[in-house]
Amino acid sequence: MIKQNIPLKNYSNYKIGGPASYFLEVSNTDELEQGIKEWDKRGKIFILGKGTNVLISENGFDGLVVHCNLLGITLNGEEVTVGAGVLVSNFLNFCIENNLSGFEWAGGLPGTIGAAVRGNAGAFKGETKDSVLNVYCINLRTLEKRKFNNNQCQFGYRTSIFKTTANDEMIVSVALKLKRGDKDKIKSQIQEKIDYRNKKHPMDKPSLGSTFKNIPVSSLSSLQKQELMQYVKDDPFPVIPVAKLLFLCDLKGKQEGDAQISQKHPNFIVNLGNAKSTDVKKLIEFAKEKVKNKFGLSLEEEIMYLDKSV
Image (cartoon, rainbow, N blue to C red; front, side, top):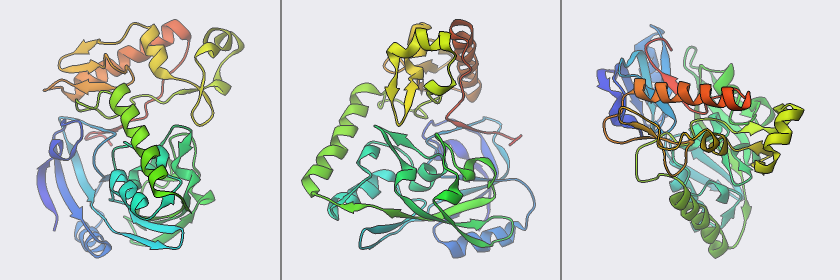
């Protein structure tokens, strides 16, 4: 089941990345368990969904990449159990067809449900955690099956326990609590979010979405508040949009190789055709330095990194 030297750029939304020394694609839990037994704890493991927020090094990954393709959606009243590999877009189509409301904020969101849970994805004042009942996992070291309720997931701003301390837990499915609604209204609200993204974001070029997390107002000093409160927005709580800070630092259009800070939305770094991970990293560090010097703020990446050292 385990393959060797598989190019990861083919599994990246960014179209960037070197080979995985070992690669396991799983479409059900039996394949996952069989593959992990074959791997037999030989080294590092990385879980990859659709690669929409992972910057993969040209050096690749010297370990096992588990590509999650766990699909399936089942409905029981207003509770929906979704495979971790289901695309958010496909799940939203299911919600429309079944008159389910509560996830409209995710219209246009790339990636999978599993990744949305792991990073507590959010937009338009909504967050994944708002709908999560339980998260079902398999530990990639012990093959132990475990259920995490909402509190146990330790959700925070763009994070969860699966992104911090429970790194060996692979999400296999998620139980979400939604509510019945009007199909046309649900469809309209989802399309509204998609249209907004198409208008405001550089959807025509490969990217990893938002590069940096927005800045919580609660973390600002009194002087920073005086300077920046005019830009505050609630998403899902008061934050300073990093895109505005990058704009004020005159970073739109800044380019390194074929990587460019988007002219359309400066919190996106787009691939103009042949960008390298090193180009993207240089832009990230440059942006951090500029924002630090101008505003005294330290930016934190929303994206993840995958290279030989992970």
